[in-house]
Amino acid sequence: MIQIQTLLNVSDNSGAKIVRCLKILKKGHQPRYGKIGDLIVVSIQQIRSKNKLTSKVKKGEIFFAVIVKTKANLKRKQGLSLVFNNNKVVLLNKQHKPLATRIFGLMPKELRTNKLSKIISLSAGTL
Image (cartoon, rainbow, N blue to C red; front, side, top):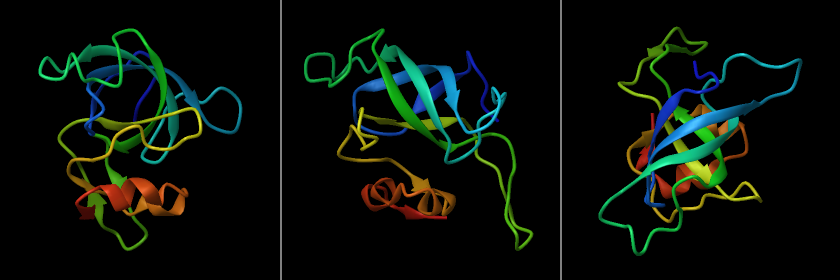
């Protein structure tokens, strides 16, 4: 579960390394936590040192992102429970399209139901 001020790793090749959650975009009254598939607003805290000149992002910029992995358990209807080692996001532009051209690692199937299938097609596969 992700809340405001949480530091997250970036799982794509946009040039950002670490981002901070500023707001969770969900229906309802002021959501406290975000889970896999939720949209959030993030600020870039650290960029990759290799890509400083060719990076699409700069430190301090604000972007939309979608949560793709969390340390909290993800329970499915079949009884399966998934746990990841760290919290990861994928950066999105203003039109909610992925900013990067590659996404690292396997993505959970829950992203498919949230109309974020472009993220799954750019990744290595699904869990």
